[in-house]
Length: 269
Length: 106
Length: 156
Image (cartoon, rainbow over all chains, first blue to last red):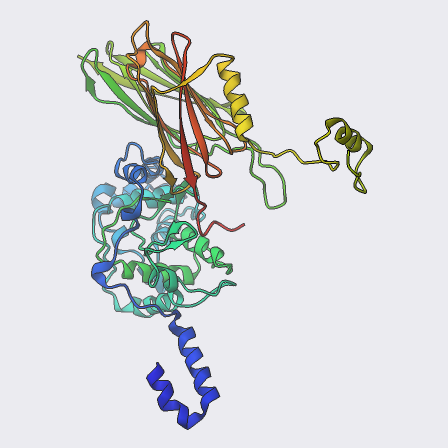
């Protein structure tokens, strides 16, 4: 940067060169990617009791939602009077690996959809039922149940060229300063992970366990809920649930976390 | 909607002290929170949890708003004879939940 | 005593005068538990009996990740026989809106005087567990817990 400035300065004048340098610093909201071998799940930073909560299904509150999800999976719904199980049979077989490769491209939407949207597409198109509201108990339960079937598998974003422009859009969002606090996701989660922010450890923000039981919420919640929390934290107006920006961010984050193990449903502070 | 999650060992030896874990879905609204318009959100908590072993109470807890949502309990009892463990939760607004688990003692 | 501030009621001035050391202005009562209220709550349960330190092991993380869900485990050194057992374990806190956390009732059938749960802490504070024995004695343990707030909380 300084090299460029010294080259440019004699030609366009000092004030402009300073302005150029300031713009260059400002756009360093574009964080450097975390080297692949340095990526780590937020699980590793959990306290002993929270780790135990996640590791043991019998004491993980998220299991309450997974149980509900299993019941919903087998429940007939909608005008078609069809259960998920009627098409997909045993979720422990048919849903294995699905959450690990979502968001995925939807031809119907001509863009990426996340798992929640995929479930709702199934509800409206194949069950002729009302889609579930975002963050509703039912949608969280089904997402947790489906996600649970990919636990232990590597996050594997689909190798789909059609997704490329959306991943790029997500990357731009990740690097864009937002809110009154005027910071980007990258500035905390790429550049300052491992350090403290007001007493809390800054994680890398790898979505390895969604939907998560967040201790702060005392409830299960989706990745979009967490993203919206962060945006609110930066005093920015958060994108609505299901907004393409949120889905693109999700898509980018899962690409960024490729290869890390899925822990759904995880416990996080 | 969610049924309680109960965890007890499948089989225990007579006289052995064994562990029981329970988890239920409940918001445990403290009564100390306010809405954005300044209205108090009324208290809505589980107030009592009890466990009986073949009809005899072996554990009872009086809960206060300080107990986190989705109340979790982990406690112990001595294996006497095979039978049934009965779990009961009662709380504000007529909340009542129950569950049972079989215990095999050899 | 002292000059009445403009706007202070007659009652406040009289109270101020009576109490001597009190300020002449009305003071708002704190709407949450204090160490004093915890002491009162403990006395309500224990009565006039003396509380001895020991035999109780209170396990709570010294630095909690989130005050909304804190793991708590209390165990009491006791043979748990028909004649020598823990009748109850009571847990209190200093700075939540209420001083009580939980009261657990046990008996010889418990086999082990130990339970775990998850609770809420509004602020860094002292947590106290009191065990009530079958012989009428009371034993206690305390833990000083640091609670930080989440950096980015859910907006309204």
